[in-house]
Image 1 (cartoon, rainbow, N blue to C red):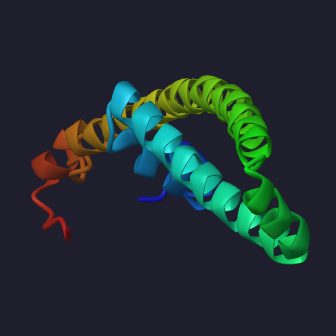
Image 2: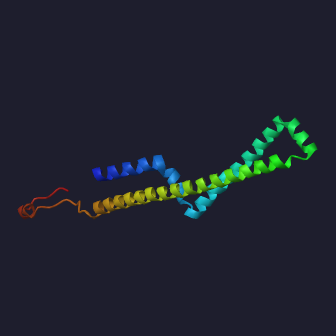
Length: 151
């Protein structure tokens, strides 16, 4: 039998699974430290690739200046400056990524725990329904009359 309580719980579960559940369950596959490390590595690789691409583009557009600096031997100063700026940027992004990943992981765990509590409530509702006695009741007065009762 369909009960209003079951429908409400199932609707809430379906909404969670459709909206945030997929992301949360993907995050839940990892421990907190593994998830933070994975996110940090992704950002680190993206930063290194972007540095290489950006430096390549700048060198292509400023090829005359780069060649003249290489002939004079003064290319080290801009290279050190670029690496220094990259180091600062890298450090800031990694710190921000770590904090964001930890926050996302903790928020996902809170939502998953609420999801699991909802599943437990649904299981309790099913168990209550299973334990209810839904068999037809037979009146003892009707038995005394000797009539046949049709079930």
